Image (cartoon, rainbow, N blue to C red; front, top):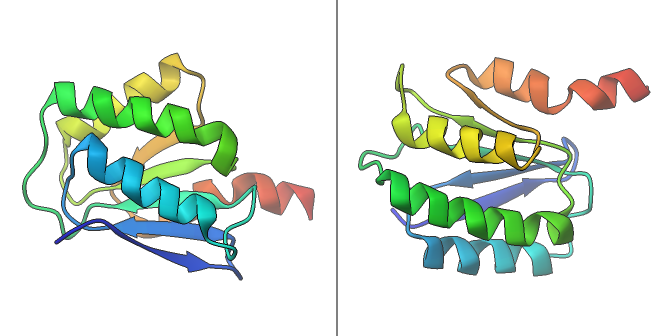
Length: 127
């Protein structure tokens, strides 16, 4: 299942689904998201891995995170989260570690509700 995204303007959320992917697929996807007029700066991003079955290796995760870092200032997300059904998802943990090193607000969750709550945490403080 290739990478795909849905934009929920009401929740100010971009949800990315699909199988684990290579960096080139992330370039294509994030370029499409960037040019989508429904997406606005400040939207949160949720990478939903619940349907993915074939994790990528550490080197691929580092390449993907280089793509994410390249697009981050243009997409201007508020936060990003990875939702995984696996207790210990090594690929997700590497992604979060790389994001931490870059000081990007990025976390991994096993619960959809907890991920959404964290993604919108700053917004509720603003209201």
